[in-house]
Length: 186
Image 1 (cartoon, helix red, strand yellow):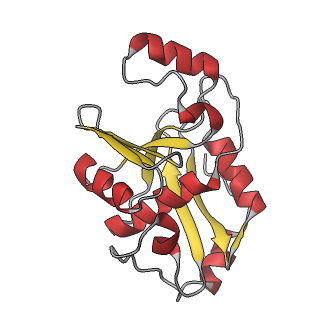
Image 2: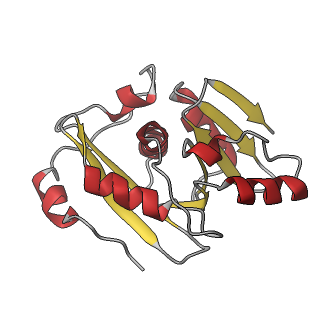
């Protein structure tokens, strides 16, 4: 199911000429996203639900409420159906990293929001799940790209210097969050 709450084609048409180039010398994710027209876009799909998301969520200095609502629903805990407000800074980090990777492939989202119940269940099965995970407050995402390695994704997200970045090479994904700046994993 493709979610489409706003007319992206109209917005993209207006801003088609306003590409944002990633410049590795910028200090944070928000710097990577600045450019002519100041437009931010995120593209993801979920193998768990079969849903896709392709939305412009920021235009000229303002988040688009309808797009953020769409992101909240898309990134819900698929096990329970619960949704919370996803922190837009997490989306900014993912979008900036995606731009730096210079790929058109959408992210595969493995995990967005996790209810405390889901987090406890996952924690009982794996030592890699934090007790007070930022997933439980809508501040984290676990993402994968087929066209880029975990190392490449990790380096792009870490270059944003805007939150936590975890490399999970054996599981083939990168954790991105808007918490304190830190990195981990192998």
